[in-house]
Image (tube, rainbow, N blue to C red; front, side, top):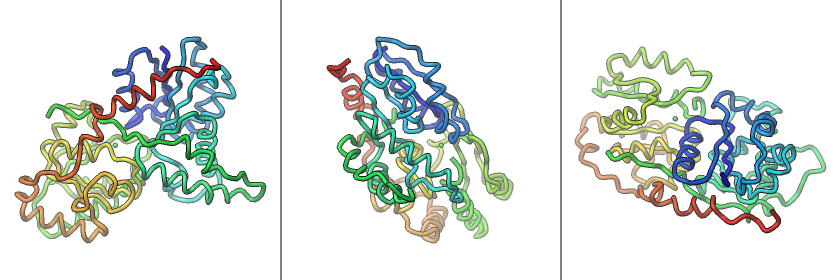
Length: 340
């Protein structure tokens, strides 16, 4: 168990990644907390893990997501501080959208900056995630009223690299930041035009579910094929394989596992021309306004053969575990530092 994996938010893509690593890499051990109330995980999980991860001389590498306050953990557990510490960013709190500004929000981004300073390697799941984080550090730290730290971006950047989220594609995920209001507004417009379509709304819910979900489910009525979380991955992929189009209306996205899984299952993607999407998808699959999205969907409803005959023009291979496993193995099986 030379590789110690700690995941403070064990759900969604966080769970998918560490489960994959544990299955594919030898000699590793995983410690987790359930994916509930991420604010509290970010605040307090370091103390929990400091008391619940056994002391062992076998550990050589520590891999954790950026939900964990790595600085607190290595201060509480100096033995873990001696390991090669790898921090993985699924998302970053410097540019993550919040419903309303609250003064305590500063702490989440600040904790991630501190974690980067004590980490040996900082890994991001996309160039968009990395650059949005690094280039926001200076502005973010100006929120401190005086005696501000300096040059943090130049200290952290040399540690950083991009390793796309590795997806194990089959043989054949929160709420307000995904902007469900825009999604359902477009669907209700299509229904109002009398266009024929069916919709499946898939995904895991963690705590608060916006009212628009229940209201829209009722309004869409017989157009709904499936609604809600599918615990079986096989069932999930089966629903994707039945679909023709997959839509994102996200206000924020740092990678987009679900969109790529849907494309692999044959769906035509429609994504905002923003965020990480231009990094992942060719231009023809991007839209700039809700009106553009609605117009394209109206066309697809009238001519479903357009998408059913379409062959995806982007690349899928760079995001597969088959393509990325060598880089992850290299990162997570490096020889220990000489001072251990």
